[in-house]
Amino acid sequence: MGIRLDWEIEAENERVESAGEDPESLRRRWRARLRLFGLLLVVLTFAGMVIGGLVLRLRQVDWEIEQALRDTVETEVATLRIGDHRTFQDMQRSATDEWLARQDELFGEYQTLLLEKGENVQLTGHVIAASVDGQRGRVQVEEIIDGARYVQTWFYWRYEDGWRHVPPDYTFWGTPQTLQNDRVTLYYRELDQPAALLAFDQLTAWLTTGCEALSCAAVPHLTVDIVPNPLAQVQWVDNWMLQIPSPYLERAPVDAPLTPGTRFQLAVLMARRLVDEQVATGLTGEAAFLRDAVVSWLVERFAQVQMESYLVYSLAARYDAPAVGRLLSALTPDATAAVLSQVTGMPLEQAGLDWRDYIEWRLSQELSGQELDVLSTTVEYSADGVPQIRAQVQSGTLQTEIVYQLVDGLWRRTA
Image (cartoon, rainbow, N blue to C red; front, side):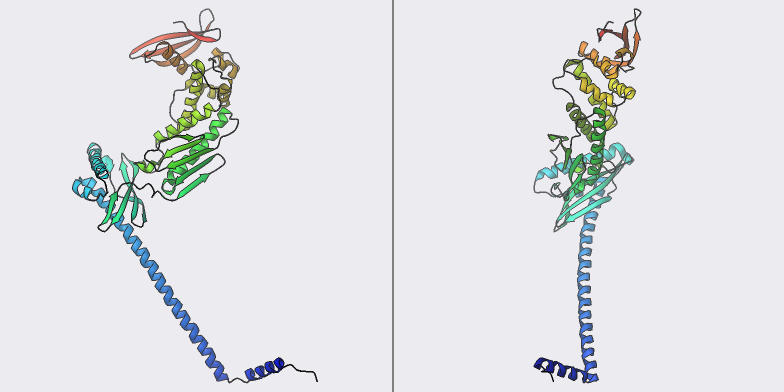
C-alpha cells in the first residue's frame, strides 16, 4: 500500500458527497441561480430604459431649445419683411447701445433693399444651419436676392425671456480645422469649411499653373489662415502666409462664399508674389511694364477676369506658357521690349505679338494725364522697309492714328 496524503483523502470524500447529493437540492440551487440571473436582467433592463429615457429627454430638450431658436429667427425675419421696427428692436439685446444702433441701421437697410428690389428680394427666414452651445446660439439664414442665394450668420443668447439677437461672437466659429497637401496648408474654423475647401483647391491650382508657366526654381509652400476677425484683410502677414477674413462676417453667397472680389484680391497677391520671386529688383521703364504685364496675365488666368494684358497673352498663346517664364528670366533693370526677340527667337516685327497694351503704356508715359484707348495695332513695314506699328487710338470721341517705328531695336514714335 502506498502512503495517502490527507488532502487526497479529503478530495475523495468531497467527490463521494457530491455524487450522492439529493437531486431536489440540486434543482433548487439551479432555480435560485436562474431567479438571480432573471432579477439582474430585469434590473439592467430597467436601468437601460431609464438611461435611454434620460438620453431621449435630453435630446428632446436640445431639440426644443434649437427649435425655439429657429422660431425666433423666423419671427425676426418676418419683422423685417413687414417693416415692424418695434418688434425687431425688442428682439435685439446687448450690454451697449452700439449694437442696438447698428441693428437700427440694419433694419433701415433691409427696408431700402425691399423697396428698391421688391419681389426680387425674398427674406425666407429659412435657417440653413443652427448650432447651440449652452446659452449661445448661431444660425445661418437664407436670403434670395435677384435669384441668387445668400446666407447671413447671426448670433443669439438664451435669456430668461427667450433667445435674443446679440453681437457676433467670434469665439463661436467652430473647432479649428486644417487642410494640407504638399503645396498648401490652410487653417480655418468649422463654420468656414465651404470657403476653406474652395480656397484650398483654388490656391493649390494657382501655385501649380503659375509655377509651371514661370518655371519656378522651387514651388513655394503656401500657408493660409481664414480668420473670423472683422478687422482682417486679404493680405500677406508673413513670407508666403496669407490671411483671409471669414466670408461669413457679412452676407455671403451660399454656393460660392469666396466672392469674385476676394478671389481677385487673392489672384493679385499670388501673381505678384510669384513674379517677384522670379525677377530682379529695381526694374524701371519698359522692364517694369513687362513685369507688370506678366502679373496681369497671371491674374487673368487665376481669376478668369479680363486684364487686357495683350502682349504677354499673345506671347503665351503663340509660344506656349513657359515663354512667359523665359521673359521674366531675361528681364534686367534696363531691359526693353527688344528682349522679346531673345525670348521668341524672332525679330520683333515677325514675332506675331499683340502690342495694344504696350502702345497704350507708351502713350501714357508720353502724354501724361491724357486718357487714351488703343483700339487696334497693325505690324507692317513702311514704304522704305522699316518695321512699324500702326495704332488706332481713341481719346474721348476722337480717333487718331499713331505710328511707332523700330529704330535700333526700340519702338519709337514717328507720328
